[in-house]
Amino acid sequence: MSRSTVTPQSQPATSDSIARALSLAIHEHRIAPGTKLGEDELAEIYGVSRTVVRAALQGLSHVKLIDIRRNKGASVASPSLTEAHEVFEARELLEPRTARSAAARATPEDIALLERHIADEHAALEAADPGRALYLSGLFHNEIARIADQATIAGFIETLVARSSLIIALYWRRESALCEKHAHHALVRALAEGDATQAEDLMRSHLVDLHSALDLRERNARAPSLKEALSQ
Image 1 (cartoon, rainbow, N blue to C red):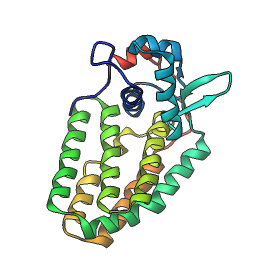
Image 2 (image 1 turned 180 degrees about the horizontal axis):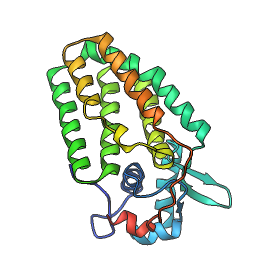
Image 3 (image 1 turned 90 degrees about the vertical axis):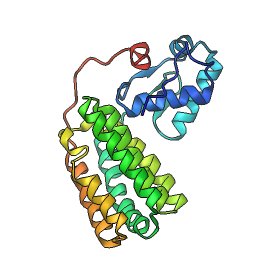
Image 4 (image 1 turned 60 degrees about the vertical axis):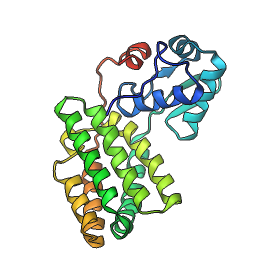
């Protein structure tokens, strides 16, 4: 699965395409939490006006991927440790029940799609691209919410998954917990077999494991510039 990052050399950028490109770069950890998102710099990178950039940033602020502060501009959101726990606790409440509902509704086509997500996720890990694997893991969880056919809850889960990406970038301790080789496979088996109780239990234990991998320590590696990150 190829990246859809928009660059100045591709088709003319719009506020939507810029928002998608920035969202993908944030989810894949190419842009770190706290990174300043200057309108002038983004306008130069994408070859558009500041008005177009501003609309893209406003859209991302609505889904809490970025923060916009008066007189300070926009930056990638940087959730606190308290919020990190709250987000995962919310996921632990919502997603197990969603997995139960999905087990009653999953079609063979749904199962095939989830299996492709897992294959792509593992390919990203083998390519030493954990950011890409994280993005695909989030899509996997969003797909289960879609299969459950609970639109309101799926919207909440999509926002929580997006926040989780930022939280993992800040507080992750154990990358192997990102996608334990058996975790998503076991979930798909339970969904394919229509085993609602097993699907619920597996999702809960998977999310508890992810939650336990959080840590207070911050990473001090040099973050790439916006231009470097968005050209990858």
